[in-house]
Length: 282
Image (cartoon, rainbow, N blue to C red; front, top):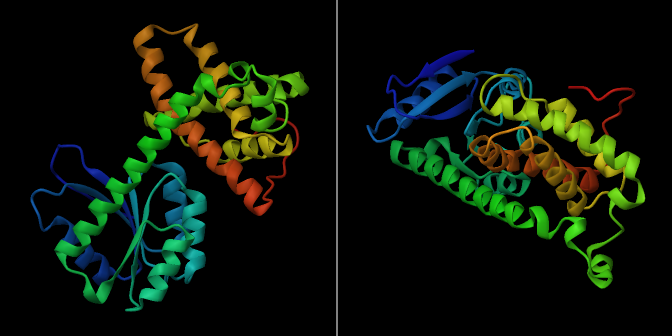
């Protein structure tokens, strides 16, 4: 793994470049660094295995991905990156001058794509900038939605029986209080580990998050149930924190809720189950 950090001390977007061609990687880096207005910290890996390891251990703002790698090829490469880090936008850099392949990448979940043969410093920086901007705007909208929903969509906020019926099955906290208590405890533990990860004080608890999402799915949870668990966990943490810390924690913790929500959607979409026994892997 080769680190190519920008010497500028200002905040640089951290990019994971997954490219097995050293010559292509050199050109991509030169394109990105050609403007004094762009500041990137670029980490280069040459195969999917190292890319997945980096995404597990470190935080990145964007992935630049070549689909053809020594240990993976085609759309499967993109799918595995997105499953590993759904919270990180991915831009595909393809050697095929075929818009059909690019559109297929968009369908799978890429933010954008660019043909290497047509790549210029301006086009690459524009694609990266737009991908980061679009993803952050969408993330901000989702965070605002979660913020608005923290209490209004919680089961305690849905007091009218008709509204509850329209919202789906009865809440887990009512029909299975013991399961809800365990779910909430596991959620709170992982949330605190996730916050340490955001502050670069620990690794991302990805396996534990997958198991937690499976627990939600096995109980037939709705988004409202997740918000219930999230809200109770925040209330418990707030009791032992000063106001400034509690506010910052609550704002940043929505990223964790969004990731768990995404995993829960994937659970229902694919029928994915993380097999486990005993205590929750952390």
